[in-house]
Length: 377
Ligand SMILES: Cc1ncc(COP(=O)(O)O)c(C=O)c1O
Image (tube, rainbow, N blue to C red; front, side, top):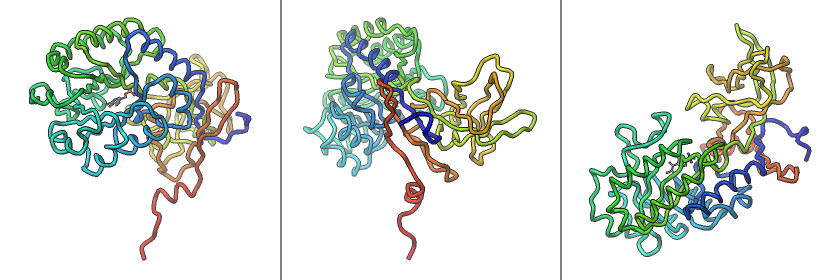
């Protein structure tokens, strides 16, 4: 398959970039002894799990279908977590997960009888401290429902659980800030942790970011595990797939209203949702910081403010030209939707040997099926 012949829009996952991140993950494991479970909420494109599996220990989840997907397609350890389980959810995952992590003491009390003896039991704690750029993604935000706060804990709960999970980081590139959070956890919950088998420190630690001090992180994790005599887990999502994947689009029109807008055959609202939710503009591979030709890279959805970014180019853009929106793997393919009936991006993987393999493609029947399967009689 020749890349130049592929029809846009599509995602292209680059195997060698993925392996680069995975090698760093391996280093971290070797230094610290921590286990790493992939957060499927961030990236669930199971067509490339054969590349990831040799490096990580399993998966973690946020809902029942992710548990099943992790169990079926990744294997290793399957962690089941949900902010709110129904009884049916608990029954559906009880036989296919290794660890079951409840978000509250009430859920733990309601459902423990369904899983006790089958899984290792855990509870999410909320340390009340965090590192997150935006309030929307801050687990320690006011009135947070994510995990049990120290002052709400019934300390007897630790006699009948095996582990706890904290998730308090979002794209944290600052190892010292992470270490301060570790210290805070140790101070607040240390005597409880000493009674447990395992502690998961969640995701959001950006240890694959260029220049990140992996050794310092590894040593801090090792010291924490030794201090409390627990097995440690991290739940990386973004760190594993960061900078591995382009969303490739084509310019379909150029319009002008004070600024030039290049309209492309994709939309943030449908295909790169976090651009919109977190107001984080995309980066375009073909752009040039000092280019003379500036464009809004606009989406083809009907939403007035739907744009990928503003970018400068050395040459004027042309209709039909392909643009590569970089770093488009995390929280994208898991959030694709059919808004406006747009063409859904296909998914490809460029293997390390240059071969391009198709992982997914969609057509009109997928759109139609997503809306109704039966009409009223
Ligand atoms: C409980 C939990 N674990 C892991 C993650 C993965 O985080 P990231 O993709 O930032 O590493 C998240 C993200 O929201 C999470 O809520």
